[in-house]
Length: 99
Image 1 (cartoon, rainbow, N blue to C red):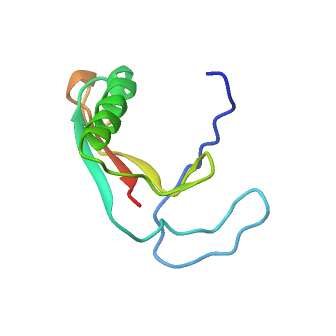
Image 2: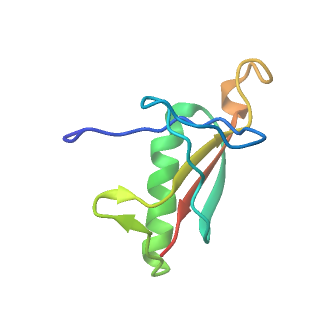
Image 3: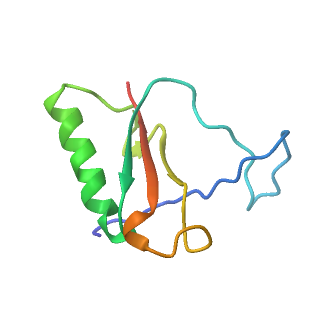
């Protein structure tokens, strides 16, 4: 990659907590998301993301952006080595906030 990539790691919790500077309390932005479920090896996620972005462009879907930052972009990992040893069966949901 030519630029730095900022990644937030999130964990669902039952109630709000205060941040401490390094840990930031936040919520997923409300709105409409374009989503897809990818079943396959994690190495295929870059291509799956490209496919979702191409589909959106073809369908004139615009993303919620703050400059070059996504307004909301999430990957949910529904399976992993603890639940499915065959990585080709792992499920990951991709979700992008639309404008």
